[in-house]
Amino acid sequence: MYKFTPILKSMLWGGNKIAPYKGIAAEQERIGESWELSGVAGNVSVVAEGPDAGMTLEELLAREKERLLGHKNFERFGCTFPLLVKFIDARLDLSIQVHPNDTLARKRHGTNGKTEMWYVIAADEGARLYSGFRRPVTPQTYEASLAADTLTELLAAHPIAAGDVFYLPAGRIHSLGAGSFVAEIQQTSDLTYRIYDYNRRDTDGNLRELHTELAKEAIDYSAEAEYRTQYDRRQEGETPLVACPHFSTSLLDLTRPYTLDRTASDSFLVVICIEGHGILADGQGRRMLLHQGETILVPASARTLEITPEVPLKLLTSWID
Image 1 (spheres, rainbow, N blue to C red):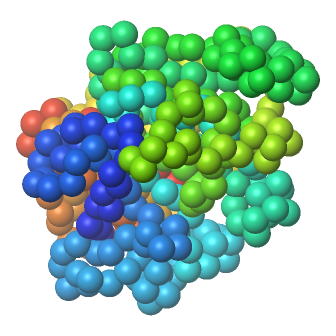
Image 2 (image 1 turned 135 degrees about the vertical axis):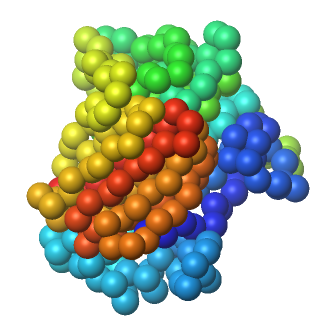
């Protein structure tokens, strides 16, 4: 099992919640994102502790191969870790954006597209986010709204609270609003088309770059009846949240010891601690403390995972089967 040093990102819209949530000291201001586990080029995670401290995730994958990723995942992804895990603190509204799917991203950029999900950890009073269109629109209607500065009128706005889940397939227009604090799980990609940014300027007084032309072909102009992911939360144990070709994610609420049987899985497991603290044991003699705001990568070779809460624990787990 492995912990990694968080990669803290100061953002124009960032706030001050991430460092205290994680229980770390940080001199950076306006931390908008903490990249917990990343294989993105130029932002590859580094092992934080233990005998492999200082080793990059790429180096770890090159050594451990299918023992870490699982056989099918190693054949598919090689030494690039396939998920990017973040905490996001939006003090201000984020830009309205869209991500291309794999086909378009590979054609244009030679990289993966980006499908992702949000789990709302906390939300200020009145916080909301945008996900999808309120009703189906045409590309022409979309372009006219941009020209008239009325794009937000076309979007589905959702008031949010802790525990809300939003699945964001590539192509879905979206944006986090001010006061949102979320965990994000996504494909390994930093590819974003920024569509609208409220005419904000950066620290140098410049308008931020927009990608409106690139976005046109990427956007899904259809509409859904419900964008919020509905789930029946179990008071004790595992609750499935999202299952898609790019990842699966569950929520674990635990007040007593719990064992995950992973004998049928051929995948790594990412464990994100949303609340509380406890001990993880992998069945091979390795134990690791885990507390709120930390993320652990469990190798595919671990056939069981024993979780012992020291106080009530809330965890997200994610994997690729």
